[in-house]
Image 1: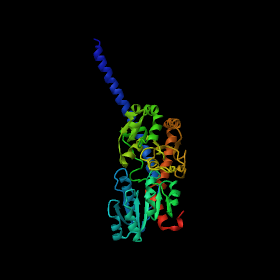
Image 2: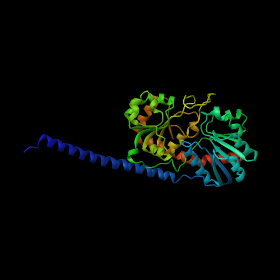
Image 3: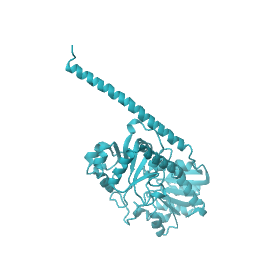
Length: 382
């Protein structure tokens, strides 16, 4: 007796489920093997990269911000790095009586991060004690309307933006140094991501107005791919409805979660903030932005292919086409995503070279090493 149509339908559904499960196991095994093999290759390269191990015979007082996230991860990364590189480290923040603490512990130098909330009378009091002071500006040139009144109070200025070196020198600051931020390899490094974190394309960052305008021009394409966008203000997109299923709206991720997104992507997009954007911008002088952002180093450290917009000084840190890939327009970005999604060997070779360069040259340990050279070894001053 022939089975009823209803029974046949059940049998077909069961057969389909069995086939889907079999395909899932096959694809899962293949994907797991590929990611595991790639992770092993990365670990092999990492094992051959030396890191600074010298302990400087100095006492540093590090003044972190009291702003909280997203500055707190930088505070923690630098404090951890400094602890391993100095004879003595005193950590405080800009909400504490920094001058009184400095008078008690007498450090060789007081290093202030960001400094936008640091009371300037505290810095003046520290200098009156004969203690050297340094500030590392983290958001140049976007807050130069504020830093213009802060920089002259310090002995040494460190800025992550090349175009701001002459800006601070013009204020009469004698010791101005170009020192971009870096990354903490305890957080940003290759990892084998879980399956649910894997994407073709990722972007982590806020939707500043000009950035949103750019992404609006790529919305149709990104909506057609396995894309993840994470950050605030993305409801600004004119094409938000096309992409809302791809956006983790309002997400503020810590370093490990951010690194997991980068590790899970085949291609991580980087887009720098425009120097003349209308969002949270205090750059009335219109100082251009020439230098790479911290995300440049963080993505590279995860051994993911980085596709970034062009910055004038990018080539000082990574070789375009060899260690990083650049784009100059929405269409070029789309074309390069398509190319590298279908050229896996080339994509991974570039990503590996970028990771190696980052780990050798762009960790926070390397940045602090350079800072100490500039502060305590005048012969290497630029």
